[in-house]
Length: 328
Picture 1 (tube, rainbow, N blue to C red):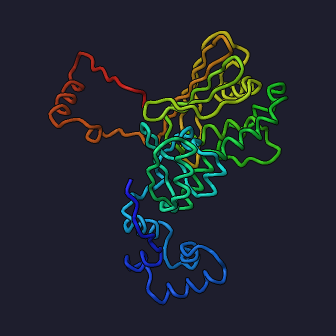
Picture 2: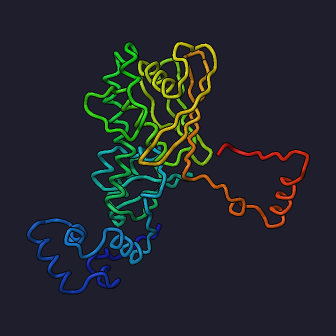
Picture 3: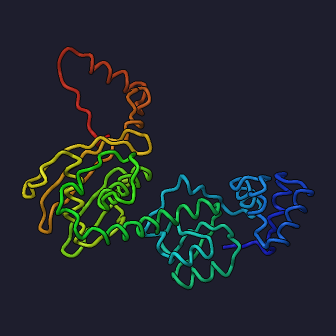
């Protein structure tokens, strides 16, 4: 990994890119002397430059790749390679791991101390990329904040499931949740909304002897999202079965159902399947985003010649056409 010999000053980089002028730079430097804030933060607060524009300019000058984390799906297991307090202290987050190389998105990719600490901590070779502070903080919230929310909710789950009213009171994820709403509802809403926001195709809720594992499938691969105490199992299963209009009393036979909900204003279909296992009911939910449905055959990836043959077959007075492939 080749690092620039001379530490680049953000003001010089923005001047070279024409994003600010000398007068604006000097004014910002004066504010920096008085407040002690980072120059980049001051420039953004003054409205002189956008955070993304600033980071892209730095990335260009440093010849280090810029990554837009708002559109980048990060495996939580990789993000947690580094403890949260270390990641927040240095303003960084691991985003990918290939072999012995760990790609880390950083606000300051020239922070040699941070890179050395991570390499010593993980035993991996660090490849830095640049990202905005906002995107890094949001990604850290997604990787660590969700679990802390869930942990707090789990503490309130001891009595959930004893009273049907606790779990049968909300079917719309768009509804506002107050402090008095059942923790199980908040927990299930959190699971589904995070899955939809991360373009997950399936949610697997799998009971084991001593805990409950939740896994998300994206890009065809199952990734563990969280492990929760065994006591949450019955409440989560009952909540999703009620939403799917399944028989919550039937736990020895497989069941299939569906849930129609809205997440952030988007209509979402969940196809729900339950199956009994040695340690309780396993639930799999396939997520179908209706806004992403493509019904135009010309945009389905057909070669022109194949599309003509397909249409001819469909229009034939007899015979059968098989359309196969993954659901959705």
